[in-house]
Amino acid sequence: MKSKISIFALSFATVCMVSSCLGDTDNTEEAIYYDDTAITGMTLGTLLRKSNSSDKESNIDKDGMVAFDGKSYPLTINQYAGTITNAPDSLPVGTDLSKVIISGMTTLNNGSVALDSITAWSSAQTLDFSKPRALRVWSSSGKYSRKYIVTLVAHKEVAEDFSWNALDADNDIKGYSGVKSVVCNGRLVVLGNTASGTEMKALVDGSWKKVKTFGAGATMASDGTQLYVADGGNINVTSDLTNWQSISANVKSVLGVCGNELFAMSTSNKMMVSLDKGNTWAEDAIDDDAKYLPSSDINFIATDTKGNDDIKRAFFIGNSASSANAVVWSKIIEEDPAKDQAWMYQAFEERNKYALQKLSNLSVIQYADVLVAFGGKYDKIYASADNGITWKENDKFKMPTGFSADAASIATDDKGYVWIVCTGSGQVWKGRINQLGWENK
Image (cartoon, rainbow, N blue to C red; front, side, top):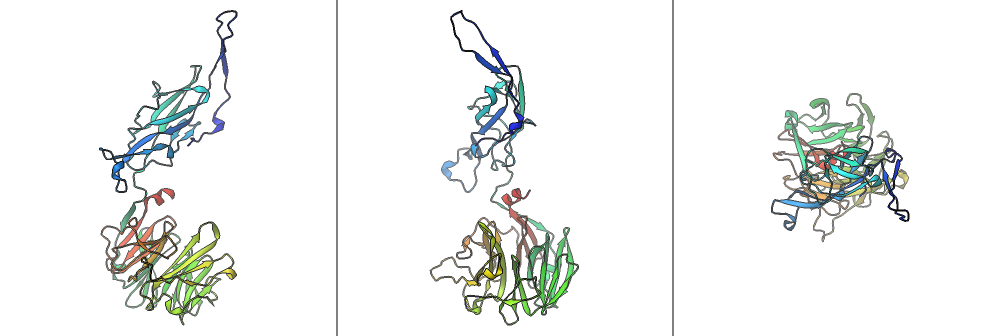
């Protein structure tokens, strides 16, 4: 790959012509030398990194290192600052920066490059870039030079690894008999079942704050900025956890939000939809028997569709007494609600060996473009990359070491974090795939 270079940094060349006369009849061609020069391109060659569990044994040398092609990591040249670096596209974790090969170098007007201003550069050299190092390019006239500081950086984490951090355990959460969690305006909000009803708490500036109590069986959902709580025939709405609006609604439970549509279950167990943030409701169409709708361990997941920002897909996933497996429903949601499709029941065929199991305390999220499910004994994680048709054990998404829960709820935020809230232990975990953290910095 060619390195980036600002064309405004290259000044017009001053030409010096030096001629020599070897005789009256000798027409020797004149050599042209230039005072101006710059490094215009630099390419990394073969590099070494520490091996990991995904590497084939045949690719690992006797020192436990694996060779890879550095040209996939372009270098950026800043002519104004006189710097060359591979940031922000860092090299893989474990790269040996003390043994670097620069396979290619281009200069303006045939300038000559020296390392640390002394040693001439060669593509056969193995160089130490464990610390920033100077390169100097000399003009072809030999009169002028420019200095560049080369800095190479490598990741300190494996891109695909999942890193978890434990927050302080909470005694109230420990005692909940069930829990639901969402993220609203950057705050983790939990709704826990107690002996007297349901209690809402929020993680504010690292500390848990009690927000409000509701009746038994209250449910909640969020679109990221608004929080909706269904309680006793009312929809309670807030954006700041302080000021609440109560809307009378004939709904039993609120499910989730996708696009501009809020979904709920009515008191007669019918799918309902609101296009005005819960003020009015209408029955929503389904394409199969309502007995297959989830009745416990309910999850609602709103996703974008690739290639079309105007179309979204919602999933309604949980357990039903009418199915030996978990049940998966999905719905295509258009920008124009009049074009919405009915909810579709995605029944698992008998030949499908990868149906989603009927796990107790089933929790489902979308993460890194796949649906992720866990529950039961929490010893296995399942992922679906085909919109809920097949669910296979996933080894990239791993539960935290020391995880303990009678029941757990999982939520995600817009910074790539996954939050797990655990009853029985009161544990609260926050984690993400390392690479998603790099993208959000």
